[in-house]
Length: 91
Image (tube, rainbow, N blue to C red; front, side):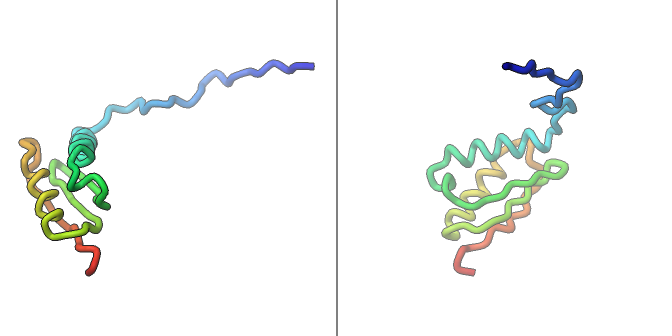
């Protein structure tokens, strides 16, 4: 015997109903840009944006990678400031 499956009237949405902030959009664009960079693709970098100030945290493999991530973020016109808290993995 089969039983009918009824859905509740107000299913939770799969997509957020509130608008996404500009800071969130900027963080996503920066993440996508870093994913396309061969030097940064496999690094452990966390990106947070607060009022157009980008905070980079995590651990990277070299000072050159740290500088490259910083320069990439500063290259965006909508970035007001960068707080580079990236550490070298050996520290």
